[in-house]
Image 1 (cartoon, rainbow, N blue to C red):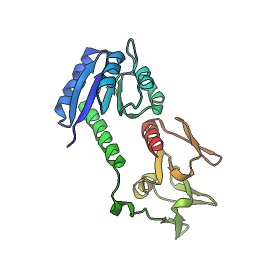
Image 2: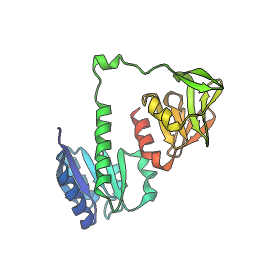
Image 3: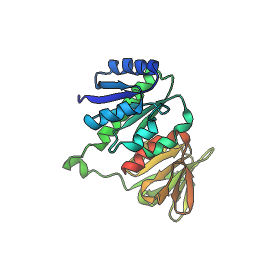
Image 4: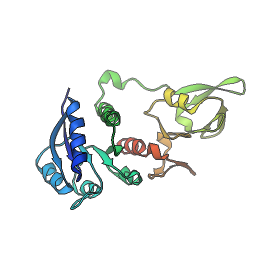
Length: 237
């Protein structure tokens, strides 16, 4: 297994010590250094290849976001902070996960798992893999019959209280099926869950911000708990 060289950057010694102990439990992680502020980290990043930052936001001298704005080709980042309100601001950077202090070990492990999953998705596919394409259509039950839904025409799916609406370019289909069942069925190369009530077709997105996605004249909200994964997916798409 390839080692991941990481930095811990936090002005609180207790926070650094806890993260250092967590890192020591994961064989894949190789701690290069712990830093008490952004300037220490900046100097290390100029000299050495780092694969992952565990980064606090509020720090003296050079804060977390200031560091991210300063360093070119920033590595993947796991933010570690006591402040929930910065999640939207982190959208523009290479943030893998957003951990709220106090950070339990199982939540730390979940962030590392997410990092590994993204690394796998970024690996080039082989020639054999590249010829495998998602199914071009699905069938859904509506009005006592099975209706064929061409996936390339599916703009977005909206989950309502007792049913789901599939919005196509020329019509809307209603089916009594859960949004989660569609999320499991549809390819993540073509579709993305952006809210507890919405899945969107990636090819139909015309614009997006940290708060909403535009598909045609419709604005789809981005749920707070989906902000990071939506940002990561759209930046890498």
